Length: 330
Image 1 (cartoon, rainbow, N blue to C red):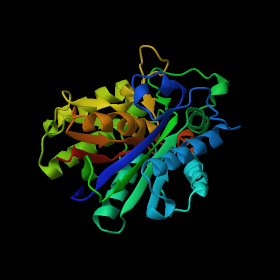
Image 2: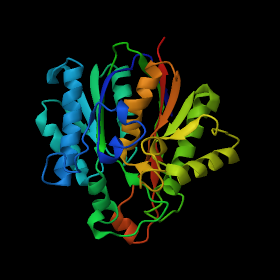
Image 3: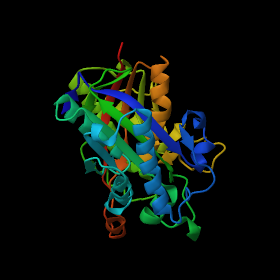
């Protein structure tokens, strides 16, 4: 269930942050910040999300000094219905496109698929991309922000931004060493305003399987990093794993608690959205790995794969988490 890779590397990345991201603790790590408003120069929020993804891919292609025909695939997804932001963004490129969906774990799914294609010599260069937009996601999954609906303290704040990475078989500083695809888990939670509780069970299962498959302990990694469990989901995950004799408390953090400053920003339990893990890893963690702060990182993007319609009908919310082992190649 866990794959090992010998010839998969991250060559380049490009990140774009929005208004709230521009006020967060890692603002200086982003390649581009758009802090004027949520429209990103467009007339709808949906078009703004499309533009975020399109621009991150275009800027990455330029930075990597490649052209469209050099890229075998773009693998991307987002939270819009029919992954519309990614679909529409790809109109700007002449590159084969694979659209994917794992909700807020989409970035992890993209990395796993890319690594397997490159390791299996089915592709040489792949761009993995994702994005999210606070206003679009709130409208689709909860209530339009303009309604002014009250929020519970357990709710997370969907991040606004996009990130794209270029993966290939060309050696570079950061290697994709292993990956464990998640299983769909359901802990019976029905509250769409408590995504951390929904997703913690999936993160626990994937981390447990990853460590068992590779016969390693949590301290093999300098950092274990979930995608967007937030402050409450983080506590639940630690407790879940402790019950199974696995202690990650010493080297564990959550991207949702890194992207924003909860003391200064009104983001409730922390960040969420596909761009939460994508921005934190691609903008911040990668640079810290290159600088030598971390040598081994286990990235675990987390996703609540629910339908608002099914929630309204009384169904519980399933979730998924994918684990990717990343190491500095000496």
